[in-house]
Image: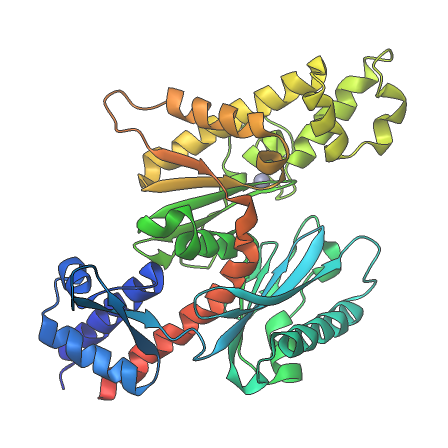
Length: 403
Ligand SMILES: [Zn+2]
C-alpha cells in the first residue's frame, strides 16, 4: 500500500473515531454527512472497530411502528484511564471510562503535605491504587495515566520543570517514576492543556473544533485546541498566554520579563497590588492584616463592595479582556472558555473580561463566543484522563494501518 493510501486510511479512521468520541452516540448517516465518507468506507472502519470491541451498537425504537435506529458508541468499558490533576491547592486523581465519566476519585490537600518529592510520589501511587480498587477495575485494563501539572513542563520527557508557585515539584521526572512504579504508560501536559482537552471533549466545547481555554488563577495560562487537536507548539511551549507583554515598562514577572499579563492581572499580581495599596490606607479595615491576606480575602472584600478591591479587580479584568481580544484577533477560535479561581470565585470578573474583550472587537468582525467554565465538569481531571485517551486512540488509528 502506498504512503498516500496509508495516510488517507488513517485520516478517515481518525475522523470517524473523533466524531464518535465527541458525539457519544452516532448514526452512520450523520457520520457520512459530517465526514464525507461513503457508507462502504464507514462500514469497513466500523467492522475493524467492532472486531476490536472498541465500539458497540445500540438499537433504539425511533418513533413509528417497527422503525429502529441503530446508533454507535465507543465501548466505554473497553479500557479505563487514570487522570491526575495537580495544582497548588490539591492533587486529584480519578479513574475514568472511555466516555470520560469519573468512576472513582480522590483528593490530596497540598497545604502542609507532602514535604518532599518522594513523599508526594508515594502518596500519589497509593491514591492511584486506591481509586482503581474503588472503581472495581482490573489494573490490566488501564490504558494509560494522564497528568496535568502546573507549567512549564517538558511533555516529551514527562518532566515538570519550574512551576513558579509549586516549587516542591521542580524538575520532577513524573512520567519515568510513575511508569517504573506502575508499569503503565504516563503522559504529561501542563494543566491548562489538560483542562482545554476536558472542555473540548465534554463541555461547552463539544460543538467546536477550535477552542481556547484561559485559566485565570494565581497565575495565568491557556490551552489551545486547534482543528480538534491540542496545539503544543514546536517546543511544547504554546499557550503561554500569561507571558504576553502588556506593558514593556511594567512590573517584573516570574518568567524574568517585565510587564507580562500575569505580572499585572493574575491573582498573585492582584494580591501584591492590594497589599501595596493598603500600606497607604492605614484606616482600611484590612490594613492591619496586610501581610497575611490571601486572594480569598481580596475576593470577599470585593463581594462586600470594598472600593479598593473593586478598583483593582476592575483594572486587572479590563487588562485581561484586552489580552483576550489580542488572542481572538490572532487565532479567530470558535470558542473561548474562561476558568480558574478569579473567574469562579468572583462572578463579576468573568463579565468584565468578556465585555472588555468584546468592546475591542475590530470593526465589522464577527462576535466570538466567550463562556465561563462549567464548574461541575472537573475539566482538569477529566481532561487529564483524555490526555491518555488521545494517545490510546491515536495508537488505534496507526495500528490499523496494516489492515
Ligand atoms: Zn512573564
